[in-house]
Amino acid sequence: MTKYAKLTIDGKEIELPIIEGVDGDKGIDIRLLRQKTGFITYDPGYGNTGSCKSAITYMDGERGILRYRGIPIEDLAEHSSFVETSYLLINGELPTRDELNRTSVQLNDHSLVHEDMQNFYQHFPRGSHPMGILSAMVNALRSFYPELLNTDEGFEQTFLRLLSKVRTMAALSYKISRGHRVEYPRPDYTYCANFLNMMFNTPVKPYMVRKELVRALNVFWILHADHEQNCSTAVVRSVGSAQTNIYASISAGVSALWGYLHGGANQAVIQMLSEIHEKGVKIEDVIKRAKDKNDPFRLMGFGHRVYKTYDPRAKIMKKNCHEVLNRLNYQDPLLDIALELEQIATSDPYFNDHNLYPNVDFYSGIMLRAMGIPTNMFTVMFAIGRLPGWIAQWRENMTDPEQRLARPRQVYTGYAPRPYIPIEDREPVEC
Ligand code: SDX
Image 1 (cartoon, protein in one colour):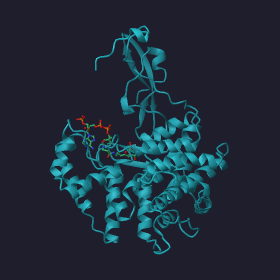
Image 2 (cartoon, protein in one colour; image 1 turned 180 degrees about the vertical axis):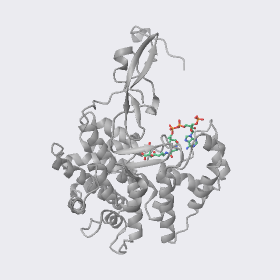
Image 3 (tube, protein in one colour; image 1 turned 90 degrees about the vertical axis):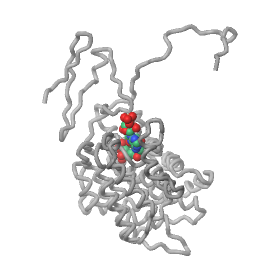
């Protein structure tokens, strides 16, 4: 491969170095572009812009490939656990048995939330969205726990604290929103089993933790654990680049994930499928609206900035969804609608021409619904899964010697210079 890209502007040619990554990843280093030419680049949404070099996750959007630290997502979903995959993403290697056992013990040690934090939940208005609560409470963690990032041991304690407490906080939020007694984590339960128990166990109806659902939740969170420089991860890196503490950086990531174009799509998919089911909306009409340029409606759970083929996670999620519904003997008409939607859309020229296929959010909500997770908590479930990825990416950004304060430029298109007009001389603007 050539070492330089040549750019000619107004007859002047400059050379820009080529950066080569692994498996064909490559980039043009434009760090000296403005200094050499006075020009910046223009790329709304950063579809063609690399913000960093990263060794954490590899995606190939054309071939539908996703690997965490080089290991295919299919192998991790089949053989790993969420805690083991979190360790891999954050530390770069799969843990030994001793390392995994030590991590599990430490996650248990960090699983309680400061009792004073429970008061915070009581004062959110009833009906507050769990993502808004989660973002606020993750930020509040900094008020209760020190940030010990100046040593490897300190960082390890901080990431274990976040991984364990955010899961507990999510279940706590649900219980308090229902006016139910809070369930505490148990030392004899694994990470995922503890979450299910904290969510659904009650004094009058003990919750039976089913190993199939624990396995399904492990797979769900493994599939969501990282995804290179997606919107919320880019936010976590950007906030961290200002030397902001990890809790505030993750809190910002939770806020970015909330949007329905991003992590909020899993809730939006269920709302779309429910509307079709409850209002008898024809699938043909939904497809028609999705294709109509004049209609802002988008087919939720379809399309992706990077994947121009079937999202590899969606394939696994669809299989996971079928398995959970079969195990629970749970018939959901929304699954039938989703399957029909996928069949019609993926054979429609508009969706083929635009490379629009199901993404991770298309089937995930149907599985969560069957497990009893309330719809407004679906994106919280996504956030818990994404946490190890955010932590790993934040740390990589903070320790990358090439990284600087994130501060994009712009092409100004406003007024040319003009004088200040005293208010007594200003004409009312015609509306
Ligand atoms: C996630 O980045 C990540 O990795 C994210 C994520 C992760 O793990 O972090 O994978 C998680 O966010 C998955 C995506 C969840 N969002 C949705 O399901 C919402 C529906 N999808 C779309 O809004 C859209 O596909 C995006 C936002 C996901 C991606 O949009 P892009 O890359 O900005 O593309 P675009 O909006 O510019 O669309 C390109 C064309 C347009 O048509 P033209 O004007 O070129 O003719 O494709 C069309 C769009 O109208 N299009 C769709 C569509 N998605 C794109 N048309 C109908 N339905 C859709 N869903």
